[in-house]
Length: 305
Image (tube, rainbow, N blue to C red; front, top):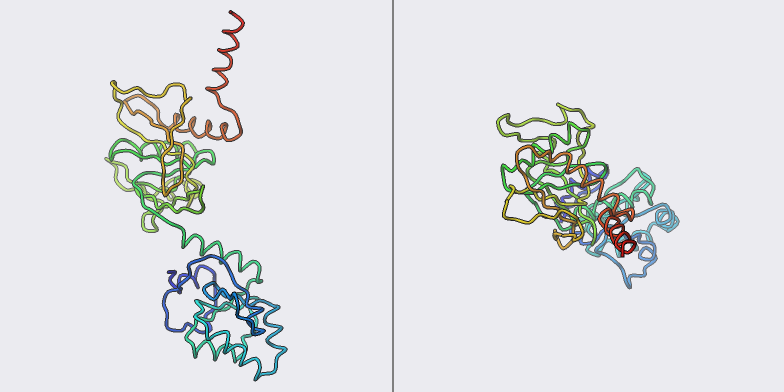
C-alpha cells in the first residue's frame, strides 16, 4: 500500500479527483495504458496496475461522440482501478471526471510526457514495494563502493566512518540503516528521514555531517556492495590474512561479500576500509591479488624443481 498523498507529492501530480481512499492498492510497478479497454476489449485487462492515459488514448476519446465516450469510460472506470493518471497536462474530458467521482477512483494529472512519467512512476512504485529491513550499522560510500559497517555497539563504527568522511568519502547512514531489496542481486541502503545526515560520536554527542563538512560529505542512498564486520581483536581467533576464501552474509536473501575486521588500539581502520573498497573494485574488474601471488609462488616452485 502506497499513501496517496505521498504518491502525488513524489511524482509532482495535480489531483483532479481524490476519491475516498488514502492509500493506493498497488502490488506491481507495471503500468497499463488502456487503449484496448477504451475500445471495449476487457479480456486480459490488468486493472490492478497504475492506469496511464497518454496522447493516443486521449485523442481516441476526443474523437468519440459524447454519448459513446461516456459509455466507454463508464465501462472502464467500473473496474476496481487503483489510480488513473492523465499525462502531458491534457484537458480531462468531463465524462472521465464524472466517472471517477461516481466510482471514487483517484484521478490525477502529470505535466510529463507519457513515457517519462511511466518510467518515473514505475521506479517510484518499485522502491515503495521493495522488501525492506532495518539493520544496526553504518553505511558509507567509499570510492563509489557502498560499505556497510556492522559490529557491537561501541566498537568504533561511527569513529571509523567519521575518519572516512574527513578523507573525502560520503556518509549515507549512521546507527540505523533502512535496506531495500531492489532486485534479486541489489540492495540499497539509506538513513531514516529523521536521522539523515546525523552522526553520534561518543564523548562529543550528535553532529550534523552535512553542516559540518558540506553537502559533498553526504549522500541520501547507496547500494550495499560489501559488509565489514568490526569486532574486538581476539588473540585466540584465526583471522584471514590471504583472502583466498571469500565469505558472504545474506541480507533479504541477497549474498553480500563479508569482511571481518579485528579492532585494537593503533589500527587505522579507515585506511583498511579504503583498501577493502579498492580491492572490491579490482575484483569486480577481474583482478585478484591473492590469486596472482599464488600463481607466482607456483611458477617459482616449478622453476626450482
